[in-house]
Amino acid sequence: MRLDGRVALVTGASAGIGRSVAERLAASGARLVVHGRDEQRVAEVAATTGGTPVLSDLAEPGAADRVAEAALAAHGRVDVVVANAGLGWSGPFAEMDAAEVDRLVAVDLVAPLQLVRRLLPPMLERGSGHVCLVGSVAGRTGVAGEAVYAATKAALDAFAESLRLELRGSGVGVTLVIPGVVDTGFFTARGRAYDRRRPRPVPADRVAEAVVDAVAHDRAEAWVPGWLRVASAVRSLAPGAYRRLSARFGEQVHSRHPPEVPR
Image (cartoon, rainbow, N blue to C red; front, side, top):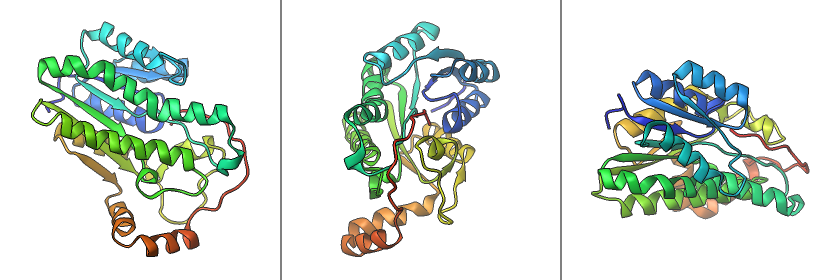
């Protein structure tokens, strides 16, 4: 897809991966609608990219529809949607209260589905568009202490694959981007900073580069970094060995009750 002149909506664009994606799309000539919860940061990104700011908390009922309507009102159409906004939570599942479960599922899974549900029909009518969902390696491999987060990303993974099959030949592409550890505020915000030596965090701009490249070339999925595919392959081909290695080298689980902040 040629990005010059296309209208792109990026959720969670106030910082981290989302901000980098917005900046790269703008540099490619796209017209931006940038979403976030922090008014000042969203305004800064909008000013930098020449985009239209949209404020909303995607955990609230109906928020995804309101974001979609605001994006459509700004330019009359949306050609590319990058569903990037997300929350993290780290700790034993047994210590996670119901409200935290609901909020994580609302932002990480329900909001992207509702956003695509609203914006997809006009794309199909035009016979052109692209849906890019930002997943996680956690959705392919599972992560101790992040059971709900991993579950939402696994569901997003299945949604992307199913939707891609459904839209075959329609002119609308679907991409799932699968990052590993990214150097943003996400890990601190989930309540536990990333403290392992390997794998080393990659810059947010590297993920943004993969997002824009995948949209431009209609790639089904993009791993960042690429070698992470190995972990998913080992899990599929040798699940017993994978689980033994995960139990030995996986992240430890700490009791905690973190705040929630968009990625």
